[in-house]
Every structure is written in structure tokens, then in C-alpha cells.
Amino acid sequence: MSHPAPGNIDWAAVRAEFPILGREVHGKPLVYLDSANTSQKPRAVIEAVDTFLTRHNANVSRAVHALGSEATEAYENARRRLATFLGVRAEELVLCSGTTFALNLVAFSWALPRLKPGEAIVLTRMEHHANIVPWQLVAERTGARIKVAELTPEGELDLEGLWRLLTPEVKLLAFAHVSNVLGTVNPVREICREAARRGIITVVDGSQAVPHRPVDIAALGCDFYAFTGHKLCGPTGTGGLWGRRELLAEMPPFLGGGEMIREVRFEGSTFNDPPYRFEAGTPNIAGQVGLGVAADWLQNLGMANVEAREQALLAQATAALSAIPGLRIFGTAREKAAVISFAIEGTHAHDLATLLDLEGIAVRSGQHCAHPLLQWFGVSATCRASLAFYNTEAEIEAFAAALHKVRGLLL
Image 1 (cartoon, one colour):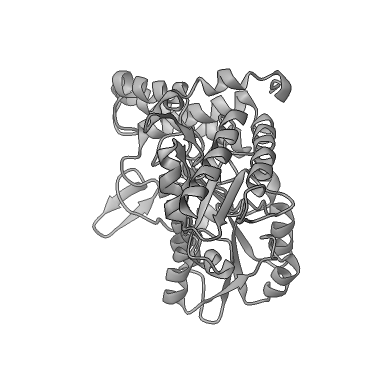
Image 2: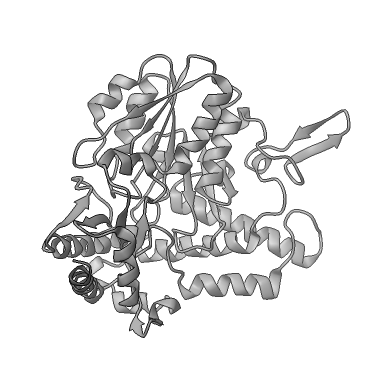
């Protein structure tokens, strides 16, 4: 599929597709710099959800009437759209509520039945809690232990240290494609190649990668890949897990209920094939339909164009923030997504974010669901500005000016 070149895209027209970006906050134009938390939604996605609910609403895979057939087709079409967007086969794509569910699915359906006392799981220092806590729960139940790969001062993975951790007792390596705090882009292909050489299963958290850069999962060499829809211009409560077909086929169900079965008897039940085996109960049908539209919308825009646009905004923002006295940026990796976590000496992150909000600037403050990482940096909280292709150069200028202003108020 051909896409317009970055220089030929009318980014103002693209931005105009996001209705919420035209509103004001506290009498100031909204400057939304919290897209790593959740993205805003284009009109096409909003209208797709509305159309489904007003024209096609019914449960999926349960009825032969017209609405039931339309709903099922819309849901499965969303799966196919997402599979195309990610470069995978639809039958290997489990639709679920997002990355947290997806990682728990792997933890409890793949790891829990297999890990033994003395075996190990490797995580990295930069992981989101969603890629830490499920593995801790599994380790507690199985007697396995967790090993942690550390970082360089710039916030990059210490690859030589990681290779040393990949000893024979390690059975699983779980890591982020892109850090939600630092923006660090990890070398997924290289890491997965080294793990595969050692027979180690790889689980990649793609929450912060899929919305911001081209991702061809099949080319990465991983075994599982999780992503979240609400960061991908889709509705909340959507997302998916890609897994190798042979691995999914070996995994028992994570949840039991309707539509994940072939036959139920009181003597025992037989289960459906993947991906349906892992989709018990009524799903977020309208949300997944909206996510499928989001994937098409972004594919038409071109993810290489999205990445280039965001990299230009990141460069502008980094330069502007670096000029502010006492401001420290956490994460200066050579390959970095459009995320800037920062602190200003003598101020608290929550105070900064509260005052920035009064200027119409939306940033996140706190520990960003990454307590071990912030502890490693020796700080209790940071502010995080996360950019998206729908932001503008003028918004970066307004953000920098507001930071100068609130710094003056606090110091």
C-alpha cells in the first residue's frame, strides 16, 4: 500500500479529525501531551462505534438473525484489519481488553503450567507494572525466580549484561518494545534472536511501539506480542495478543465461559481452537470494531509518516526543554520514541503538572506504573510529556513557555 510522503501530509487537516483537540481547558486551548497514557480518537473511530451501536448491535457468534450475523462479521473483520496492520495471520491474533490482559494470559496459560522450581524469568528494569506483576505471581506459584536486566545511564538496555543473564535455567524473557517512561526503543530483533538461540520464549510488550512506528510482528522473531488499542487511536478496553500458532495450540484456556468451548458436559469440557479458546464471554464488540477502523485509518496515513512526524516534534521539544534551567530529562537513548520524562530541581512533579493544567497543558505526573525504574533513578516522581502526530510545533512552544512560567511560580 502506498502512503503520502511526510512532506505532502497536511498535518493540520489530520489534527482536525480529532474533535477533542479543539476544546479549551481552564479557558486555554487544550495542549494534549499525554498520548502514552491514552491517545485521542479520530472522527472515523468515533463514528464507527456509533454506527455499530445504532445499526448492528448484537452479540457475536451466538445468533443466526441478521443483526447477529452483522455483528459477528464486523468483529471478525476488525481482527482481520488488525492482523494486516501488524503483519500477522488473523487466526494467531487473540482479541482482548489490552496489554495487561494479554500478558496475564501468557503468564497464566503458558508460563504457569510449565515453569518449575529453580527456573527463571528475565525482565528488564524499564518494564511497566503490567509486565512485572503477572510474572511475580507466576514465580510465587511455581518456585521460579525473576532476574532483572539493567540499564545504562542513558536508559538503554545493557545488552552485554542481558546476554549474561540468559543462562540455561531461563525459560522466558519479557520486555518492552518501547519504554513508556524513557521512550527507549529496544532492539527487539537482536534480543529475540539471542533468546531463540538459547531456547528462551520471548514476550514483547508493544503498547508504546505499535501506535508510533511501523511494526511487523512476524519479522521481529518473538513468540508473543501484546498491544493495547486505546493508545492506538482506538477505544478503551481493546487490544490483542499475537502468539505463535503452535504455542497457542498448546495453551489451556485462561478464562472459562461461553464461546471458548466445543462441547460442555458435567464430566468435562472440550475447548475451541485458538484464538477463540482465549475469548470467553461477550467481548467489547463495538470497541474492537472501532479499533479495526483505527488500524485502517493509521495504515492509510502511513506509520512511517507518523514516526517521522513524531521524531520531528520530539527533537523540537527536547531542545526547548533542555534550555530550561534545572530541568533533567530521564532517558536519552540513541533510538527513542516521542516521550520525555523530566523533573525540575526544587519542584515536585505533581505541582508542575497541576500548574501546567491551569495553562491548558496536559502531562502526566507520578511514577508511570514503573516504580522499579524510578527507584533506580533515585526519584519519587517525574512529569511525562508524550507526543503524537496530531500535536503541533506551536503546542511545543506553548508547553515550553508554560514550563518557564510555572517554574518561576514554584521557585
